[in-house]
Length: 130
Image 1 (cartoon, one colour):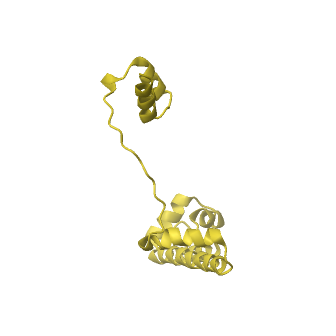
Image 2 (image 1 turned 180 degrees about the vertical axis):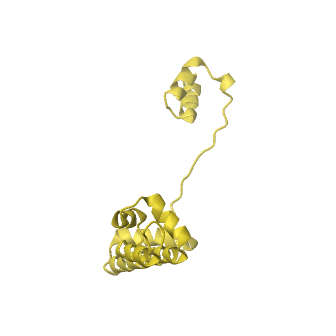
Image 3 (image 1 turned 90 degrees about the vertical axis):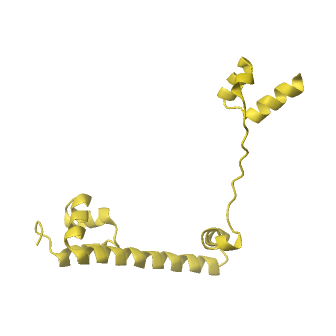
Protein backbone atom coordinates (compact mmCIF):
# COMPACT_ATOMS: atom_id res chain seq x y z
CA UNK A 1 0.00 0.00 0.00
CA UNK A 2 1.23 3.54 -0.78
CA UNK A 3 -0.26 6.35 1.30
CA UNK A 4 -3.40 4.28 1.81
CA UNK A 5 -3.78 3.42 -1.88
CA UNK A 6 -3.58 -0.08 -3.27
CA UNK A 7 -2.90 -0.85 -6.89
CA UNK A 8 -6.41 -2.29 -7.10
CA UNK A 9 -8.25 0.81 -5.85
CA UNK A 10 -6.14 3.08 -8.06
CA UNK A 11 -6.85 0.87 -11.09
CA UNK A 12 -10.56 1.04 -10.30
CA UNK A 13 -10.33 4.85 -10.30
CA UNK A 14 -8.42 4.69 -13.58
CA UNK A 15 -11.17 2.62 -15.20
CA UNK A 16 -13.91 4.90 -13.89
CA UNK A 17 -11.98 7.93 -15.21
CA UNK A 18 -11.10 6.57 -18.68
CA UNK A 19 -7.42 7.26 -17.94
CA UNK A 20 -7.74 11.03 -17.37
CA UNK A 21 -5.27 11.81 -14.59
CA UNK A 22 -7.14 14.83 -13.20
CA UNK A 23 -10.30 12.76 -12.86
CA UNK A 24 -8.39 9.87 -11.31
CA UNK A 25 -6.93 12.28 -8.75
CA UNK A 26 -10.38 13.66 -7.90
CA UNK A 27 -11.78 10.16 -7.43
CA UNK A 28 -8.88 9.24 -5.15
CA UNK A 29 -8.88 12.58 -3.32
CA UNK A 30 -5.25 13.32 -4.15
CA UNK A 31 -3.21 15.45 -6.53
CA UNK A 32 -2.25 14.71 -10.12
CA UNK A 33 1.34 14.45 -8.91
CA UNK A 34 0.33 11.64 -6.55
CA UNK A 35 -1.36 9.78 -9.39
CA UNK A 36 1.87 9.95 -11.41
CA UNK A 37 3.84 8.71 -8.39
CA UNK A 38 1.36 5.84 -7.89
CA UNK A 39 1.75 4.93 -11.56
CA UNK A 40 5.53 4.80 -11.03
CA UNK A 41 5.14 2.67 -7.90
CA UNK A 42 2.61 0.27 -9.39
CA UNK A 43 3.39 -0.72 -13.00
CA UNK A 44 -0.11 -2.21 -13.26
CA UNK A 45 -1.55 1.27 -12.65
CA UNK A 46 0.47 2.74 -15.53
CA UNK A 47 -0.60 -0.19 -17.68
CA UNK A 48 -4.25 0.47 -16.80
CA UNK A 49 -3.88 4.15 -17.68
CA UNK A 50 -2.33 3.24 -21.04
CA UNK A 51 -5.06 0.69 -21.77
CA UNK A 52 -7.84 3.16 -20.94
CA UNK A 53 -6.29 5.81 -23.18
CA UNK A 54 -5.96 3.33 -26.05
CA UNK A 55 -9.56 2.22 -25.52
CA UNK A 56 -10.72 5.83 -25.65
CA UNK A 57 -8.81 6.34 -28.91
CA UNK A 58 -10.55 3.26 -30.33
CA UNK A 59 -13.91 4.66 -29.20
CA UNK A 60 -13.18 8.05 -30.81
CA UNK A 61 -12.03 6.40 -34.03
CA UNK A 62 -15.27 4.41 -34.08
CA UNK A 63 -17.29 7.60 -33.72
CA UNK A 64 -15.25 9.21 -36.50
CA UNK A 65 -15.97 6.22 -38.73
CA UNK A 66 -19.68 6.54 -37.95
CA UNK A 67 -19.54 10.18 -39.03
CA UNK A 68 -17.63 9.33 -42.20
CA UNK A 69 -20.25 6.68 -43.02
CA UNK A 70 -23.04 9.28 -42.71
CA UNK A 71 -21.22 11.52 -45.19
CA UNK A 72 -20.10 14.14 -42.65
CA UNK A 73 -17.75 16.20 -44.80
CA UNK A 74 -15.84 17.58 -41.81
CA UNK A 75 -15.10 14.07 -40.59
CA UNK A 76 -14.07 12.99 -44.08
CA UNK A 77 -11.71 15.96 -44.46
CA UNK A 78 -10.26 15.40 -41.00
CA UNK A 79 -9.61 11.76 -41.78
CA UNK A 80 -7.95 12.52 -45.10
CA UNK A 81 -5.77 15.26 -43.60
CA UNK A 82 -4.56 12.98 -40.81
CA UNK A 83 -4.51 9.56 -42.46
CA UNK A 84 -4.32 10.37 -46.18
CA UNK A 85 -1.10 12.38 -46.20
CA UNK A 86 0.64 9.73 -48.28
CA UNK A 87 -1.95 10.34 -50.98
CA UNK A 88 -1.44 14.09 -50.99
CA UNK A 89 -4.21 15.12 -48.60
CA UNK A 90 -2.26 17.73 -46.68
CA UNK A 91 -2.63 21.41 -46.12
CA UNK A 92 0.06 23.37 -47.80
CA UNK A 93 1.46 26.56 -46.49
CA UNK A 94 3.25 28.68 -48.99
CA UNK A 95 5.80 31.19 -47.91
CA UNK A 96 7.92 33.59 -49.83
CA UNK A 97 11.38 34.36 -48.61
CA UNK A 98 12.44 37.87 -49.43
CA UNK A 99 16.02 38.89 -48.78
CA UNK A 100 16.10 42.59 -48.12
CA UNK A 101 19.14 44.71 -47.45
CA UNK A 102 17.58 46.99 -44.83
CA UNK A 103 20.46 49.43 -45.14
CA UNK A 104 19.02 50.38 -48.54
CA UNK A 105 15.58 51.25 -47.16
CA UNK A 106 14.56 54.77 -46.20
CA UNK A 107 12.92 55.69 -42.89
CA UNK A 108 9.38 55.70 -44.34
CA UNK A 109 9.83 52.18 -45.75
CA UNK A 110 11.22 50.94 -42.44
CA UNK A 111 8.31 52.49 -40.54
CA UNK A 112 5.77 50.88 -42.87
CA UNK A 113 7.41 47.48 -42.47
CA UNK A 114 7.61 47.94 -38.69
CA UNK A 115 3.88 48.77 -38.73
CA UNK A 116 3.22 45.34 -40.23
CA UNK A 117 3.05 45.95 -43.96
CA UNK A 118 4.40 43.25 -46.24
CA UNK A 119 8.04 44.20 -47.00
CA UNK A 120 7.76 43.06 -50.62
CA UNK A 121 4.72 45.29 -51.14
CA UNK A 122 6.42 48.26 -49.46
CA UNK A 123 9.44 47.92 -51.73
CA UNK A 124 7.31 47.34 -54.83
CA UNK A 125 5.06 50.34 -54.16
CA UNK A 126 8.07 52.57 -53.49
CA UNK A 127 9.93 51.46 -56.62
CA UNK A 128 6.83 51.86 -58.83
CA UNK A 129 6.27 55.36 -57.40
CA UNK A 130 9.80 56.40 -58.40
